[in-house]
Image 1 (cartoon, helix red, strand yellow):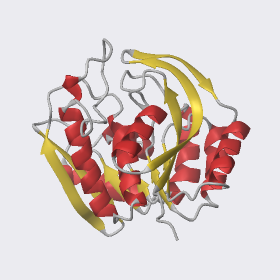
Image 2 (image 1 turned 60 degrees about the vertical axis):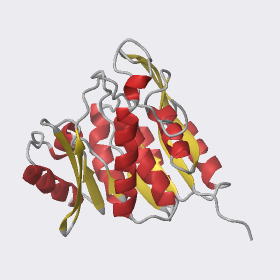
Image 3 (image 1 turned 45 degrees about the vertical axis):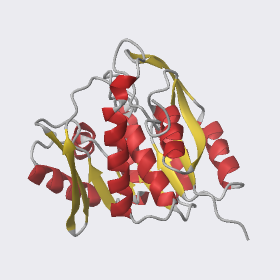
Length: 269
């Protein structure tokens, strides 16, 4: 008998600049102790200053990638990121329904530069087809507001309320990320149908190098879940990992815009 290797499958878009998307996911999964497999949904021409082109991968090719991985690798957790279009959402949802492991859904909609990464028509499909299958949904404040058709939360109480409303759409748990909030402390809240489960707070770091934070956070959570940690512990560990990666971001000198976090801050400087 051999020890099981924790495996995370990330289904997301490619960022040619390497700071977000599949590239950030693989880095974060690797840095936090799991093996990362990948399915690419779109190829973006992207750097630290913006997205200049998006090439959608045909839905049947996305489906074939998922089938290839799941038919061979003993995947513990599926992490979803940029799904981009209705056909890709549908193809992914069909296969997610056949997966009996854990799932982490990062509802990627807009890049750090403001460019759209999810077509308007795909938002409703994401809500009806993906959210009911999510073990954990990890929206930032603007994403949560978009999913609910409301304004972004500005207080802890509103974050909890919106998180519970999102649980009402199907996810078993919701992590409301406070990175887009204001003030000297960044607070995330984990909620389920019973209400507030836990809060995770750290001092806000003054840096422009935060490209790929959402991808990195959700991928790290998935990696810790794949290692057998319970949800609250996995989120706590990922929260600490991301905070350290942001704190070390300015030691990197990547690009002219919003640079990436330092995924491998624990391995090299």
